[in-house]
Image (tube, rainbow, N blue to C red; front, side, top):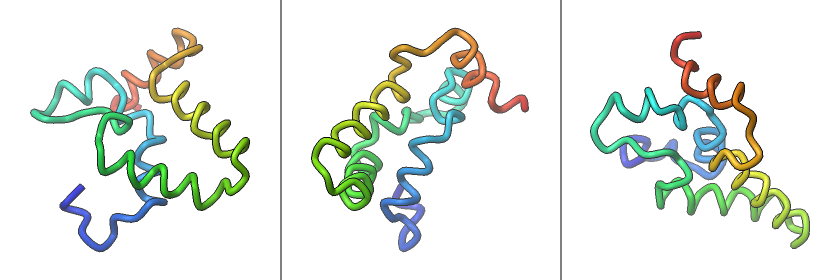
Length: 91
C-alpha cells in the first residue's frame, strides 16, 4: 500500500478489499508477498475506518463487517463463486 501514498484512503482500501481478483489462488501465486486484502494490516485498518464512517449504527456496522468476513473468507460461498475468483484474470 505504500506505493499509493496520498491516494491511499479508506474508500480505495474498501474497493480493493472487495475486488475478487485479489482473492484468487492464481493471482496470489503470481507474485512474492501477495496476500489477500483481508490479511493485509493497512488495508484492514482503512477498511474498518470506512465501515465505521458509513455505518454509524452499531448493529448495521457489525452486520457489514460480518458480511465482509463471509465474502473474504468464502464462508457460505458456492463453488461457482470460487471458480469466478480464480478465473477473474482470464475474463
